[in-house]
View 1 (tube, rainbow, N blue to C red):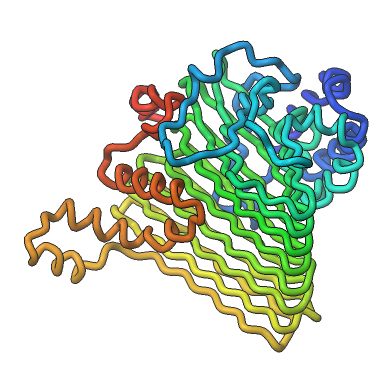
View 2: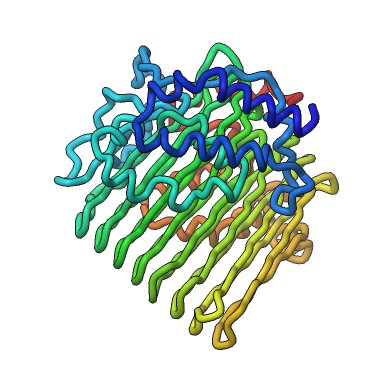
Length: 461
């Protein structure tokens, strides 16, 4: 399908269902739909000819026939039968989305006073002032065709608001479940607001249940106000029939702290777009990721950190382990504005290829327009250190076990950045099992209980 025909496909989808979309959304959100529609008509679905998407072909999955999820539908199943986290030490406020729709009757527990959590569609009606202030201000429809498409078609997602000075004792855990009898396209919209001096730890867990194909276009806008802190963790553990394009668009004010961590343990195709605008003095962020791919899986991490004001610090660390015919890509762009003096910006990307058929593309980029800065970047692509392997084997450690030890040592630096102890221990376990070939599923969750079968069924994908 040509790109013009592909663009027309989604133009027609919007035109045919516009009234349904408007009926299921708030006025504030609807005001953006036609603007996004006009932007999408100009941009369309990004192609590999676009510099930003040159290593990931998203035209192909978007050209498939999917049933689009366009209305807020009440989930009729028993969520406890789908998901149960057996990590007893991971005490969280837990909530769910199913196919992009917030489960309105799930109760995250007794949240601190003033904290608001709910479905995006419902909260946009109940708290229009907050939505009007923040919605569409970071994920700009002119920036990317997938943002415009999401803004056209999304009807629900997650809304989290933490008022000034509030620091919930427990993390919020959001389980995003995909399950359907048909192949479906999901557009999910999330809005996260952390006001001044507030502190939020937030975990997104992305899971699939059924063996159908899924195409997910998720856009998350996050705002961290003066002296606020956001610890964000995204754990992607989906089957090979899943294509997920996740857009994470953050804005930071003065003295704010953002820690964002991405763990791509299993997926068919995953594209993580991470954009951070540092708009206040003395802002700081640490963005890290660990990617594990095998078979024909592909993960593309695309980061852009903009230092728009002086005296801010950013740190990026992304690592990938690629096996079989797995492939990956990393683009890391650091932008320093002309008056953003005293900027400290560091970026590191390291990649480990376990086979001759694995492929990695790395593009570190610096765009600096100030002269009093400390900025550095580096990228490596290589194989296991043969001398280190020989050293371990010479001390009686078998080749397979020695290989696993070296892979885990490679991943250790990223895992250690997790600031929730129970989650850190769980990720350690999952990564080790993945390296041992024991893990095609997150075996701590009922939701993933049949993923081994799923992976076998989809092994040819």
